[in-house]
Image (cartoon, rainbow, N blue to C red; front, side):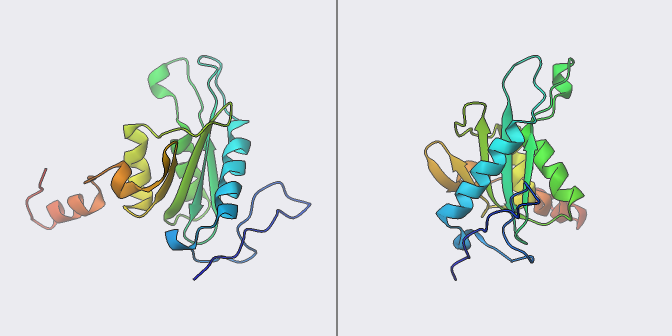
Length: 168
């Protein structure tokens, strides 16, 4: 199955849109046009970053399995440990707009360069996209199973709740 090319946003909206109606998508459906749309959304989100301390804006975008595109940016705090990364902001938007599973992810810095999610963010993305989530990396696109091999996730906790031994 080949996914349709993403359409341009309607003139009255500046939000990128995959399709008029929810269009179920999977990693196999992704086209170069889809990746371009994700990059544009990540760049748009990056412009909203709040970075008075580092002056290092980051934007992220993800394609959801129902065709929505969600975005996020980093939001700093004077207590640096409370800073929100772009991936956290993206997952917040994911849930605020109906939930679902992430299919594809891209992240950029203030110059538009591709960024690699840190370990914490890889874990966050794995939880909401699983092993098949495709990540745009500086070296090329890779599934989460490669970016975060043998990840710990919800299935491990479910097994523990069901009385099984967790394996580390």
